[in-house]
Image (cartoon, rainbow, N blue to C red):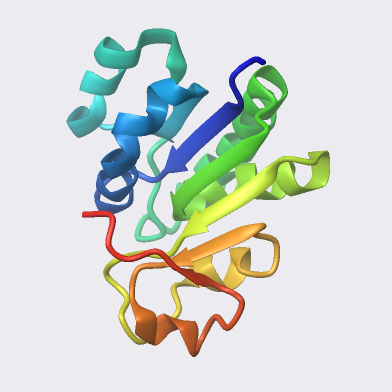
Length: 158
């Protein structure tokens, strides 16, 4: 039996740091990793070579350039999805993940979302958006089960 095709997706920074806590299971699957290209994560390309793909880094703080970067990333996400065609998409968020998760849902991939460790009592914007489309929605705090009643408490990944 062949290994499942898993796409791990996260924005750079804390979301990527959370996702990388799952690194020990990467090799159990035919995996690919997608994140934003920044100086702090270029080591991933050296470590995982062709299994890593980068999107353009963008933040909503840059009001004029963000919409263009977002549009570019949506098209690149479509190209990456077609190229990788994952069985599962595992993500800790944020905007980098949203387009890939939507594409995945449309084309039949299973979506696994891990809500941010940083939120103990409130929903994240990405969590609100991906909760209805996730096949498995994992929270790291029991208190979030009140906000996401169909979620699974998975404990901390740190």
